[in-house]
Length: 113
Image (cartoon, rainbow, N blue to C red):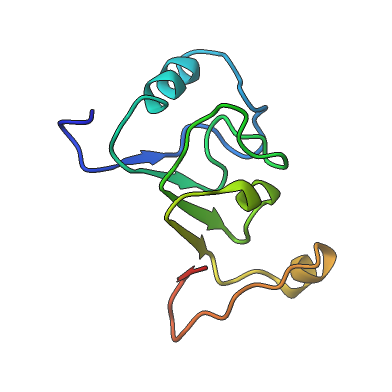
């Protein structure tokens, strides 16, 4: 992987999956991701991370793209860049979860945090 590609997109597990879920083929993919030397771009919650507590020996992404809003685990993100994607978050959802989404310039749907 390190010699064949410039980056890896981590979209293996979703936010609802238990951290460290060991079923195949995910376990083998996560084991491989822990050893790559090229940048990892994780979508929403890095695979192997607990959505609230963050990393527990999982991967260490260089870039995190949070969908709609950063999750609790994003507080533990130590990579180079963090983005949020999804400018259209209904007001009722913002109010219910006390979210304060960033301003999106023009028609942009992704913004750097």
